[in-house]
Each structure stands twice: as structure tokens, then as C-alpha cells.
Image (cartoon, rainbow, N blue to C red; front, side, top):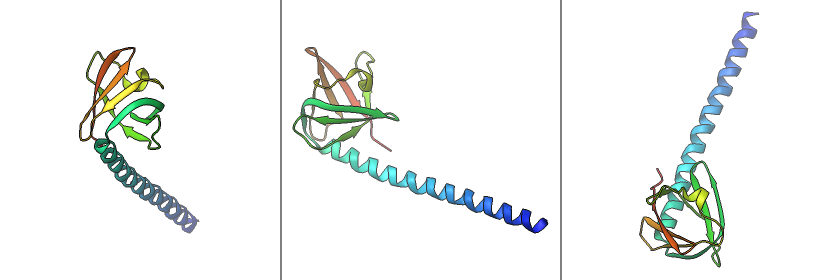
Length: 120
């Protein structure tokens, strides 16, 4: 009876360790991918209309008309507090110069400024 309890504890402990290792590996992989995507976005010179926008867990994913690249970014509102992920729509125009951490969103002839948060 005692032996079965020990085996059960060992199995549970092993499963727990596997879950922790998987979570750590996933987190490391996510951070590497995020850093690469942030560098790609920072280096890009972007000007055009949004053809795609989605967001998840604070990260916004966008595509520009005529561009195959899907950029990921974390925009921080600088103007009147309009969250990019809720405010920007397909068809809105954006401008971001290469090596700049500022993105301009043009909506109905009005420019909104966003800083791009560096991913950790």
C-alpha cells in the first residue's frame, strides 16, 4: 500500500516538473520571438493603410496594404488616451520612420501619436 502511494507521488511530481519545464521553454521561446519581431518593426520604414489589425495579450499585430509582413508592436498612447488596439481600424493610415519608436495613426484627417514600447 505504501509503495503505491510513493509511486503515485513520484508520478505526480514528474508530471509537475514536466509542466514547469514546458512553461519555461515556452516563455524563453516567446521572448526570443518577441525580441526579433520588435527589432524587425523598429528597423522598418512603414507608411500606408492598415489592411489587417488584431491584438492579443497587449500586443497589436498589423499589416500594411501591399506588404506581406505582419508586424507586432506594443503601442502606448501619447495623445488623448485612445488605445491603439481599440481605436485603429483597417483603412486608417500609419507612418513610422525607420529606427523611430513613434508611430503616427491618421484617422479622419487627425494624427494620433503612439510610442512603441520595447518588448522585454
